[in-house]
Structure formats: C-alpha cells, structure tokens
Amino acid sequence: MEKSLDSVQSRTCEVFDAFKQALETGDTADFLTTVTEDFHFFVPLPLEGWNHEQQGKERFEELIRFERSVFQMQLTPLIELESEDNGVVVFRSEGLLNGRPFRNELAIVFEFEGERIRSFREYVGMPLKNYETP
Image (cartoon, rainbow, N blue to C red; front, side):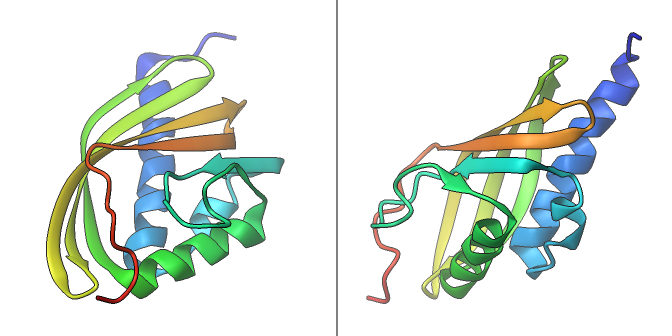
C-alpha cells in the first residue's frame, strides 16, 4: 500500500510536534505513545552516560528531565523531509541555557517502523559545551 505525500509528511510533522512538546513542556506522553518496544536514540551530549546510544522510554524521560533542568527552549521546524522509513526535521532551538540566551540549528532523523518511531538521532549545528551551571 502506497502512502500519499501528505500522509507521509504529516507523520514526521506529528512526531516532531510530540518531540517538541516533550522538550518545551516536559510532557512526554504523546511522544512515547508513538515508539516501538525496542526504541533507542542518540543525542550529542558531551557528558558521561549520554555520549552513546540510549535505550527505552524511561531513558527518554530522563533525557527530557535533564534537558529541561538546564534549557528553557522553543523549537521551530524549518525543513521537514521524509522517505518511507525515515523522517528528517531541521529545526531552530532558542531560549536559555543555564540562564544565558542561546540559539542553535539542529537536525533530527527519525527511523520509522510502520507508523511508529523505532529510533532517532539528533545532530547539533553548534556544539553546546557548557551544560553545567557556570
């Protein structure tokens, strides 16, 4: 069964909106209802314990709690692309990092298994070096 371009693009848009909601508000429920049982992810955090692939829903919730403890951010999607198995969103993140203004462009690649997210990998445009309180 072939998917229309609109349904494919809306899948990536919906997943990114749930990801955005998790990072901006801390509410992970919508995002986590879309992941597979073997869900895994990678985020380029230069910190021990986060500098390799992460596994599972609980670890994603830990990521959101951690990032919200140092970031207050708003995400703005700039480009959304999708193939049958992957969705890519280039987005702007801006807000406060440890109380100081920041702005960055990032990309996230979602790997889909049907309508569910099997994994994602985030790529950072400008490394954020100081995650600890100055």
